[in-house]
Length: 492
Image (tube, rainbow, N blue to C red; front, side, top):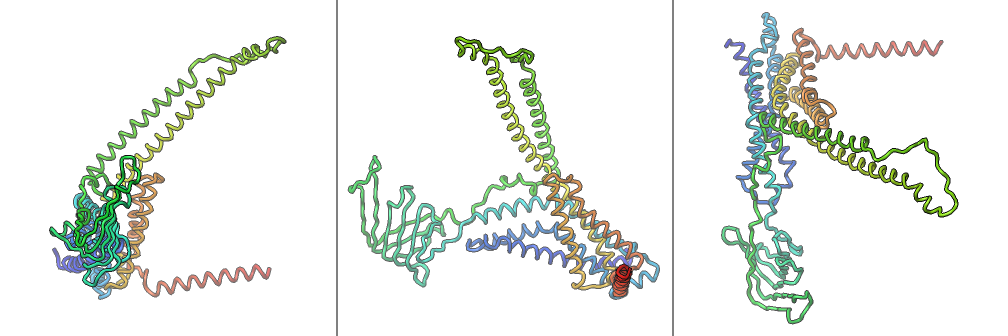
């Protein structure tokens, strides 16, 4: 490796590692803001937060790599342009295409790493992270009994404390409704005071009540009230034990989350796509077979034909009711056949609509899986596209640091994100082919990168003050020309 290559690699690696860490940290803050309410009051512990941060840090790496590549490339070439190092190298006869080679090789390595990371590490991190997040979201709040409010989180019980002492454990005027028998408010305990504490490492909550009464109202076999079934007990000290088994995090079997496309690699996604497509073809053949059989039943069955050339015979005098019935016998049978056919046709159309909805949903499964499969390639390729834009812009702007590069990087990353969301949305709905939807962002940015690289290779002054001054002068000249034309038309 030549000294000039070492210079570019050293100038690139430092900002790349730093910006990757910063971008991952920013995405972690976004994750915290999204699910902040799900973490409050659940006493999760440092181990749970540590696992969540680890898994979601791994999840955000593929998204962070293109932005980190763009920002690091901009800072690398911007710093060298700002200190006139690029100008000196170009003056020595070294073209820009040769100067970007060492960082280009490094970007290719980053793209390859991104693909394998998306294919193997990211599905595993998605499975671990989102399954743990599901359990956290479904975990109950820790015990937080507020004075004067009925507490309903203990299964089978409703309790209210009128006043809590400063120590947090002593209480006054306690009411407990026992609903474990599912027979309404027929078991009530009232106490003047009490205290609560945990035992067996927090698995059980004990309410120790003082100076209270317990009211139990039973029912006979006929579900009627009987005074002999009413029981009232007085006590000076009583203990009620509640199980805390439902509190805390209960881990769900991770196999229940493996159905999602985010949890699969390319081979698993390809197998899913092939399976669903076989089901769609089988369903389509079944529909075609049903359509042919229904067509034969409706239009080829000979129930009897109507002779349209035969004239109606007038009813003669006499027993006209029998004559009327005999004359209408044929038309009645025809109407019955017609109504039966229409009813069967409506049922068949309803079946077709149901099958069409099923096939559309299955097609959407194929589109989603195909989009996720292509994203493992497009996210890796976007690192190369961002490198192309960053190296050319850095050579043109010639500004280093975290000022201009950060602004430009965020702008292009937002453009990439918006195009990706639009392409995915239209592809998932079947409006455009999946291949078109997933490659729209990289295609648009690649064209921009090629244009900027051509300008940078020709030492274009695209973003310098003189360029904007010339552009403003051109606009002012065009405005004056239009004004003269309007004045001439008014004078005529």
